[in-house]
Length: 620
Image 1: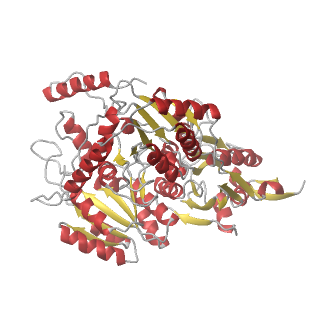
Image 2: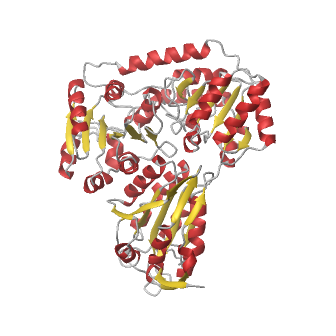
Image 3: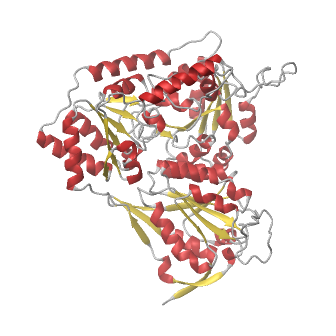
């Protein structure tokens, strides 16, 4: 057996550079680069390998470990999970900064490859700088925190262990049903230790992402259930996007006159103005999808996790006869809500079902309900886009104006706060992959950093981060990286002086505003109830080297947006919007933990309302 002597770090890079995926006959190089922030646990061992390596992968300098991992998630999501950028960090706090990103990737089923450095495998210098000592077991390190948020976790205690670890890592990363965060911990002494690796370990390796075909039995059972339904409703989830099944879903809907609502991850797979597209569904959904869902006797969930936001805490489907048919490549998701499960690829399943139902002559029994619901909702969106306020800008009006100025190819990125609700309800995408929303974890701080990843994936397009001031303050580290690398991104910062989304939730449950507004502490009351913090976000971003604008009026917004499109460097538009000018709910309910005992009568009333809704909601 021919071998080559390399350090573990060198062998790791050589292996990564030879990984490819193939989907529907199209081959892609899988690992396109590495994000890194060097520290003492990384810079000497794996860092030396990165500095010396002569392969194709590009090394990017992150500014915050979570931020760079968010950028990597954004990149992989935009690439439909067929290309990734790996992330590596030092030990201790640097590694732990990536735990949140690992959770974000796993919840959203996005491949994320993490290489946090670890303590010494030999333990000779214990405790090393930044080592977390657990007196119950010295083998426990900070990196054990990755276990519950990783789909695969391993620690390379000897250089030869790299081989089995990385084959398993690729198995998980390229599995459409089981992908997510993969964490490979690299003890800092082992990073530099050498081993005679078999040359075949570094041969080009193609990982085939295959479409799982539904069985005849699954199709027969699913077709029979659909044929028994009179008013079915489909839910278009993120799995439709990743399986490139948008056209198949559209044809299925048209053939059998079945309307559909969209999840955050599925939005944009089919143009908003399709006659059967009812838009967002659930807690952050619109009136059309939620009204039709209330009467539907069958819910056909396609590629969705059926989260509480999608199902309105399982209270959206009010028809007592309503059942769920779930088409999902992931069996864990497919069996949710007591569904009849078809565990298979979305495109293959929809196409096969289309042939079966067409042969049976099936058609839903909708008349004008869908048309009228869509018309009513379109009128409501137009109204919200035109809302004017004497005291300043409404959030919905700003979104309406921005939507007019964007092209069909522009991409928006979001994740948290009130903007995801407004965007799922109001945004009108025409082309796939132009609506990029992380709402599985709703991770604050994802927006700006992921926008860099999306821009790296689609450098020819204009990419816009839709972010609130609260989330921007949490994390926007890779804004600087975008300037450093020459990837122009655009930050649309909606400044409403606080955590407005959570304040709305607080108030809706009878609780007065407390701890959710960005105000000075009042010396009389002792509370954060003084004047608003006068934060000049544009001035701060200008210090990074970005081109910035501050907006108080619609005219200023139009001028800033037009100018920003012409700028060659990353931009930030600081948009001062009025609090409480976002969209509200539309015939939906979201269960939150309302106090059972309170001196506040409004809270007691909210608790009673919650009890009423729980009784009506499905229990599965």
